[in-house]
Image (cartoon, rainbow, N blue to C red):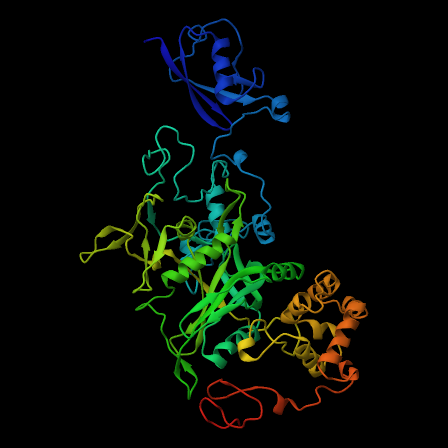
Amino acid sequence: MADNIIIRVQSPEGMKKIPSTKRETAAAFLKKVAKEFGFNSNGFSIYLNRNKTGELVSQNKTLSLLKIKHGDMLFLFPSESSTSSGEVMDTATPHTSSSLPSVQEDEIDQYLAKQDGKIYRNRDPQLCRHGALGKCVHCVPLEPFDEDYLNHLDPPVKHMSFHAYLRKLTGGADKGKFAALENISCKIKSGCEGHPPWPEGICTKCQPSAITLNRQKYRHVDNIMFENHTIADRFLDFWRKTGSQRMGYLYGRYTEHTDIPLGIRAEVAAIYEPPQNATQNSLELLDDPKAAAVDEIAAKLGMCKVGWIFTDLLSEDTRIGTVRYSRNSDSYYLSAEECITAGYFQNEHSNPCRLSRDGHFGSKFVTVVATGGPDNQVHFEGYQVSNQCMALVRDECLLPCKDAPELGYAKESSPEQYVPDVFYKDKDKFGNDVTFLARPLPVEYLIIDITTTFPKDPQYTFSSSQRFPIENRDILGETQDFHSLATYLSQCTSTSFLNIVSDFHLLLFLVTNEVMPLRDSIGLLLEAVKTSNEDLAQTWKKSEQWATIEQLCSTVGGQPSSSLDYGAMGGPSVPASSSAMWSCLHCTFMNQPGTEHCEMCSLPRS
């Protein structure tokens, strides 16, 4: 037994311990190393020193004669030929960058990965005692994940950006060589043959680890910005007219958010409202046969689905147009059911990530709630749920509570499904940290808040001044058909064809209508809207498809064809004041045309 020794072998992929004996020859030892690391016989070299001196060659001398003792460290270097031919290591270490898949990340992620990200500071005239070219602790650039800097911003930032978190992982001497992002799994690992399958058996190898909920230190999106107020106002019109809640998908793009180091902003350019059943207190989503077409149109317009929005509004005083302030620290910000829905959407729209072995990690899909604020006006609040919540939702481990919307409930294990224990920490009445089982679970542990803003200078991806009816609003009498298209075109006073067709809902109708869908021939028009190119729009206007559309509008809409010559007739034939719905100045209720008093508050129109 005294002859048995352990030799440590350090390679670029990590260290392994090789059992051996003092009397073992160098040739036999090298074969052991090749088998352990997955090399062929001549695909590597081993040295006694890190600087590649004292090479251990294949010979019949024993390790004791070569002065290799128990616990010694040897250094392995792959040969260049084996590296180029792909013979290095059949199985890579799980936490090395070489084992990570090749992933096509989003454009914003590729852009931010190339940025410096450091926070540069000017020379402090009071504390800095060096020359203009020198640096000290008071003016040296800070890392983007510096918590003191984030806490002293106005307002303070609780969550660093995701790319700042990646810089923290990939910093240091190893440059993130052993950094890997692991997606949480709540399911039993398959392939364990040492026992019968669940529920008859389980072991520590296949059993998922217990989860302790913690505040996530980072967030994938740092700001949500609507391009202009019109987008939100048109969405809120449904609630104003019916009193029922509404849900929609946010379409836009991800850009850099310069207020936070390496931050990401979700810019919202349009809201698509899918088929749904809505009441004053509930929403039910229905199957949407047009979902794929909407995503395809958005992609051709340079946009993607960045989130979802829903209303939770209840009138407080109809005379002054206030709404009830119901979501606060005394009740809840997001209910458990809404957290589960957000987790479902985030799992559907996962974030491509090169540092994850699965090829994805987290999500940039955001949640926006239109609800009453402290001033009893409509506010837009942005959220995401944590990666832990996404895992619990994906593996069907989280349920809502029926009587308390602010509480979730971690499922218990059953013969059909094993559920790991879920814990959270809180303080007891004596101020001590106590661990509780998440049955029930306060959903505050799952929520990440995101600032939602509107720009001072409105932006317009879609520049049409007229409003084409929004899809799936038949309950309001607003339908998308050729009669509404004829009315829309006859009311357009702009001489620019690009401005006329630059409406997201109009483009959706042109592609998805059943009479004459233009899905295969509208590519040029979408490119014109994307690039704001009037010449491309005019080229498409001369196509046979648009001539047919004009003819259908002239026939179905009952309008003379000359009225479709935009700008020639000076606008609509009927005054807008008598043919358009109007919003009450006092309570914002949308009234039918032809009335002079508000139907809701009975106050005069003027």
